Length: 354
Image 1 (cartoon, rainbow, N blue to C red):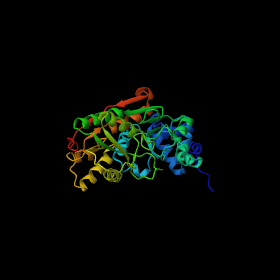
Image 2 (image 1 turned 120 degrees about the horizontal axis):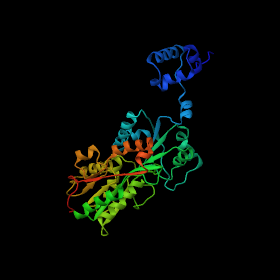
Image 3 (image 1 turned 120 degrees about the vertical axis):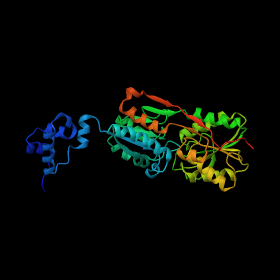
Image 4 (image 1 turned 90 degrees about the vertical axis):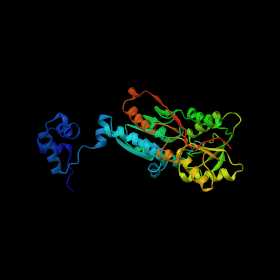
């Protein structure tokens, strides 16, 4: 079997030093175009693919890659409007800075915070062997073992949650939800249901009435629920329903659970726009007039929210993604915590309680 060509064999064949061959691939500005073309022609003739990326990263301490960790499966990342917007912001900075982006679904967190040894090994396998300069964590619970692995490896993490990783880019979920609650209280709503996203896919996914702080809800969902309750005031009747993943179907099935539970609420608050759109679909299928018989709110202000006339909280999702990459690339410039502003956008889906 023929010996594979190496950097040294290319240098010998081209009549240049090994460092010149390396520069032809990694630092072309340090040589003339003529020399570089000569080296690359010789490399192509010998079948040399270029310097080994992992070896180069070990020498330089940089890989040119960041991982994006999220607590859902990979196909979900391409169907969730929020995640798509976040990834767009990440990609904008990554493209400008020639940074590679590795999508890394890391599975659910455990509601109890406990995993079997095999579960933990399965969850962290890809992250343990990935070559990264840093990681972006969206919706990854603080108890997730993948965060311990990254910390042990010295890989910096920027998160969308406080208390996760080295730095974070946040919106004030609680304060934004308080504003929603105050808006609805001003319209006379006191009997309210909340439809919330579930983080733990080990849950059976069936919608059910749960406590506001149920551990299998996403942490940001718990913050929003607490804000809704505070804004609505002490006289409110608030029921929380865990909906499953952030899909239209989850919102629809949670609405069926709410309607079957007894008295219909005058308002249904969803912890995301996608869930809210599922709520609207089911209510309309029942002949309910949105904004008059039942008010509905969401969170995120995805493009579909505007088309549906949904009252929601606008958060700068794309800017969040951009800033997270910038924090990884230049920690000194971004600081350790950034809190982005939100805006309550009132549309036709909310009106006076009846």
